[in-house]
Structures are given as structure tokens and as C-alpha cells.
Image (cartoon, rainbow, N blue to C red):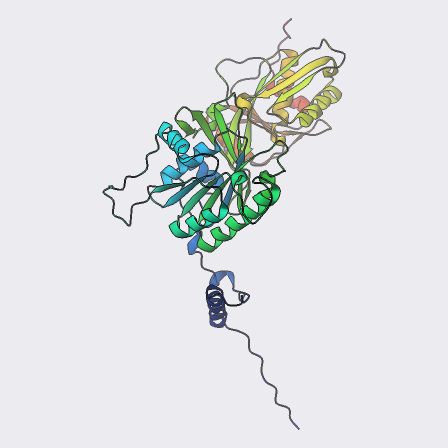
Length: 450
């Protein structure tokens, strides 16, 4: 006796799309939530992923070529570093094209207006000649209650909103104080859900605490799409905006700004900012090309080796990782015989830029050796290479990109690791395999001055 077998059918693409739409309809009508049907990448619409410019090319670079609608961006940094200033300037640039909302939870509306007047930020007047469709305004909301902020976002439906800052926002249903870990986490989670649902781009300001963990940006890094950190010395005018997490672009990208009485201005050629005077060579200096993300930056390193007046010599670094500097000093003493254990040693990067990548090792070693021998490196020479514990010079990443940046700024020679195949860069290349060979190539054969 034959058995009738009912054939199994697989859902077609049209069936999956209908199921997904029905699931969305049930949720919008308040019915029981139904899991979304799985779709292929080709079936998912990418209309909401079209980036738009923030009005500042340096900020667009760090975000990954522009702002992604519906993304949640955390901007962290020390108080007073310039976070609110940059975001207010960005909102002014966006207000000419989009409806934007600035939630000032730490300041009153009058305080923000005074800063806007100082920065020459002007809101578009209601009597503008633009049509009502094309007109976009910069709205201001002094509020700390999250429920009131969410209601305003629902009513206004802005394309971009800024929450300044998340430490001052509180959820009334929680008993903890504003700024606590639970308040910060729950408020950010609620804002994230709204940003994804309504495709509102949210910029959240977070202050860095002393340890960076308690109610600080570290608590929120896993919730947001992008994490930007503002860095800078309060005694210097430049500011660095660095991306440490980005779901829509490359990490470790850097945007460079300069603080003035009119706010933050973009620095389109940061190499000129971190490059010292190359016209007159001085002992103990060397030039490297650091890569911050995909951006090469030419930086001058300065070193000083001087007799110590203490039982143990002092070591100090500015912009260079301290432990890596100690490792380079040990290699110079063990492999080259330079008696640095009896000398104080200092190293600094021009402009205070943090240079933590291994490609700067050889430049640091040559700068220290030049200071010890009181000799000068050719100011038109760049030095690139990682120093191994055995005194060897190892290869570095993005070498061709670094050399092209150096050639563009007028450098003539480059001391590089041996064995790397490169295209024509316009520089005279000097490949070396050991630190001793690099020092011989970088320092002229002259007697040490007394």
C-alpha cells in the first residue's frame, strides 16, 4: 500500500517579505510581538544608510565619511576640552539642511545662547525666504527628565539630536541619582532604541571621570555605534578627535582641530602643526611619519641625554609610550654600548601628539643617539622602523603611504627597514637591517664636539 507523502515547501523570497511586513504591522498595532523573518542581505533596504555630511570634513573623516542616519555616537572627553563647542558648531552647520535638536541638560538656554553668540552661530529666522519645506531650525531644549526628552523627540522628529550630557539625564522610575551607572546605562539604552526605531542620529556627550569607568563613557561603549574621544593638552591650542569604536567605518581615525576665541577650527594639514622648524637642524631631533588610522602625520621627535645628578637616572616621556622608551634605551645600551644607565633620558613629540605605534621606535633610538653624540640628523630625512630586542629593524605597516606624505612635504631621504618592496615615492631610500646601521646612515661622520 502506497503512502502519500506531502511535499515540504520552502518559503520563497516573497513569502519572507510578507511575513516581515506582517510582523511589523502586528507590533505597530500593539499585538503580541512576532519574530522577524530572516532575510538575505540583498533583500534588506539600504536607503537609511546613506551618509550625509556634518559640515566639517575632519569630523566626517572620524565618523567614516559622514553621519549615518539612526546611529548612536558617544563623544567623550575631559570637561572643558571642547565637546559642547564642536557639537554646537556642527548643529549650526546641519540646521541649514535638517531639523536638529540640542538638549542642554547641564546648562540653561541662556547660557547656550551666549556661547552661540560668541561662536557667531545664528539660528535661521522664521521670516526666512526659504519655503516651509526647505526651512530647517536649530531647536534648543533645556531638560534633564528623559521622559520629557523622549516626548519632544517624538513630537519634533529631528534628523539629528544632541544630548549634552548623559550624566545629567535621569529616568524618574529609577531611584538612583543622575550620573550613576544604572541611570547612565538605562537612559542610553532608551535613547538607543528610539534612535534605531525613528532613524534619528543621536550624539551623546559623556564626561570622562578619573578612572573612566564609573558612570563614564566606558560604561556605554558597548551600547553605542561609534565612540569618539576628544584629546588635547589644556596648555596647547590643538585638539584631537579620535575614534576608538566605529561600526560604520575604520577605527583610530583622527580629526585635528585648533581652539580659538571663535571656537574650533579644522586643521586640514596636521603635519605642519606637529612638524618643527626643519630649516635649522639641532642635536637630538629626528622626524618620523605616524599613521593615525588612514592619515599619515609627520612628527618631529626630540630627545635629550644628559649626565644625571641622582643615584638612579631619570626617564621622562611626552607623547611617547613610557615602557617602550625604556625598552629602546635598553637596546641602545646592550647592543650598541651607549652608557645610558648613567644618563638622564628625555623624549618628547612636537605638539604633544601621542605616538604609540612601533613605527616610531627607530626615530626615538636615533634621536637619543644623536643627543648622546651631540650630532644632528639631516632635517630632510625621515626615519621609520620598529626596533627589536636584538637590535634589528623590523618592517612597518603602510610604509608607502608614509613615504608619499613625507615626499609631499619636501623631504629628500628616508631610512626604512630592509626588505620592503615599494613603488616609486620620489625619496632616496636607505634600507637598514639593524639599529647600528641606521645610526651610521642618519648621523654624519664627524668628531663629537666637546
